[in-house]
Image 1: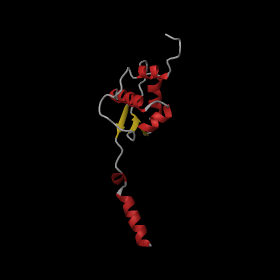
Image 2 (image 1 turned 60 degrees about the horizontal axis):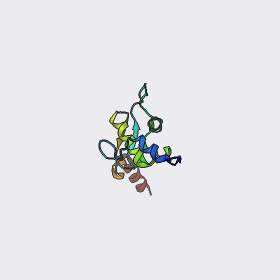
Image 3 (image 1 turned 90 degrees about the vertical axis):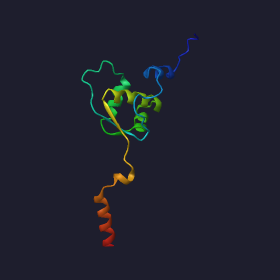
Image 4 (image 1 turned 60 degrees about the vertical axis):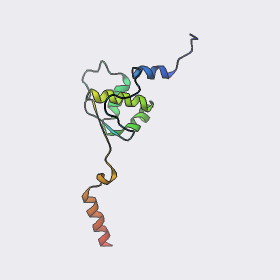
Length: 116
């Protein structure tokens, strides 16, 4: 041992227990994460897990969670997978743009075009 600080990589490795892939179904960077529940007693949750639960009280993309916590995306994915497995967050694929536009908007656009 040289006595040098091993740096943040050792700590990040410890956060995930050495895992590189999230448990369960895969999700991408634009998937939307929402906190479903915050456990009353939180003895097993690290500060990073609690920070994600706080950040995702409002629906938040996976990439934004990583940016806000300043953690690598692979670490965030593993933690999110753990939180999802425990039923504390939901992770939803975003709707394609064509499905996100509601019929009412189409009617308003059509009405506006006709009024021209």
